[in-house]
Amino acid sequence: MMLKRLGTIILLFLIFASPVRADATTVSGISGDLVCQCGCMMVLSNCSHAGCAVREAMTTLIAQKIDGGQSKEQIIQSFVAQYGEQVLASPPKRGFNLTAWILPFAAILGGGGVIYVALKKWVRRGRQSQPSAMVEAEAGNEEYQHQLEKELKDFTEKGFR
Image (cartoon, rainbow, N blue to C red):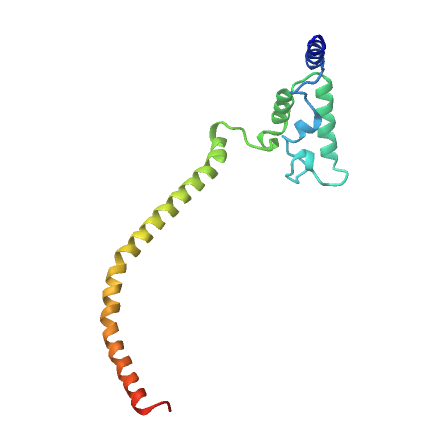
């Protein structure tokens, strides 16, 4: 019992004493939110140009700003001020840019709705035309039935040729 309490106290101490920060600002975390400005239009952390000077300059600047104590938002805003909103890997979720976030989902929902309505009409049309097709088939079957009976009679009388 005493050992269990001591273990719990030590565990709680270790949890609260650990220096891990969940929102730690890192160069790779920030470079994943920015686009390299060398013209490749790739995310800064994924720029594949060998020896890309722009990528190196941007990541060095990010590291300097982190060392200077700036937050992730401050660093990103400084790049937006320098390069404009085109430096952002994803458009901000406000204003006109909100359409870039909403439009794909609206198009998928709208397309699904159109497909649903078209399928409902198609099934309804198929159910309505089924009885009339049966009547037409039965009317045409009499002629074929007489033809079949005549050919069977001829076959039984004359045999196989």
